[in-house]
Length: 100
Image (cartoon, rainbow, N blue to C red; front, side, top):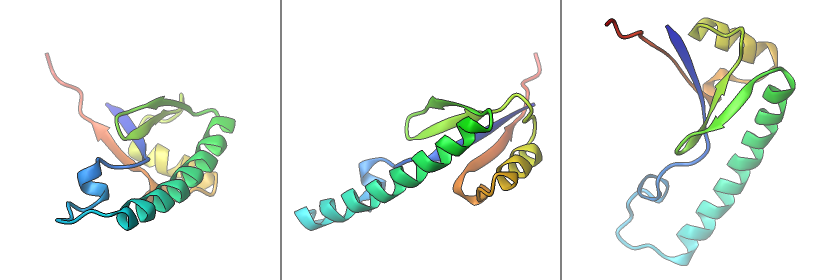
């Protein structure tokens, strides 16, 4: 069983802009501010994780994180909390192994 630890960065435009009927410059400016805050926070978290031995790969809308000693959802949560990082910032789930 593998554990997936993903740190969301942003969503697709239809999610980020909530499919508003009328889009204007103000909505884009608000999104830009929100994205800047989110990405700065994610960068700080990533720096902490890298210093603690985690690796990161870029996903479509997130960062996929791994640690050699993390083999379950509980391991991931325990390690994140040990670093003072809120696990609620992540999507953490276990993938079931497919049987041949």
